[in-house]
Image (tube, rainbow, N blue to C red):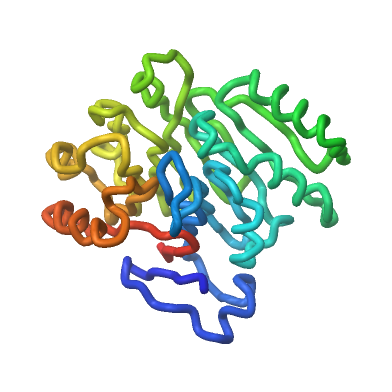
Length: 279
């Protein structure tokens, strides 16, 4: 059952609420739903990276790890409400669910449905469309559009504004490819999604020091969290949600992780698959 956290306190949805996410009245709250929270590989309890922002029943997805279409369906998130997909980088655990997501979007389209896909490398667009063509999947071109993410303002539709912030994740492999964090603004609410980072945390977005964020969704696999405490303490965030969870923080490791970050000056949580946060 989908679980929501309010002010980072976890409570289960009631039976009436579980009949459908659209039946829940959120007012002006933004919902962050961590569909998939694992690191580079799926585990027995976590799927690959996929995070939904829900704003006034409009859905926006950051990363599309498999099986993102199934996870949206399981969590009663209407696919026809998906307005945009933002990819942080092109590692398989962040894009492996794109083909299935596109299939689900175009197989049962609703009136006036449209989804924008923004990928960090232009070559990925041709490769993705080629793979869909190889599976003999066609669609009305009005249903989908594709673009390339570049640093700076990336997307706006009257509900949210999204800005791409370059990171250096591929330097872990000594490769020159682009990767991004995203600043998401919805009304008066502001969020930072770090994507995957460099091993030394040197590319953690400086915006977190200079701007106030209602929440930061930060990965916790590619660096030693015990070493980066001083950087995190300087963040101007109201709450920190850790995702992209490494093996060492699964199971009993979760308590160890939360003990480590307990000295930070804001509440912290480790996200789980299918978990929601009201902000």
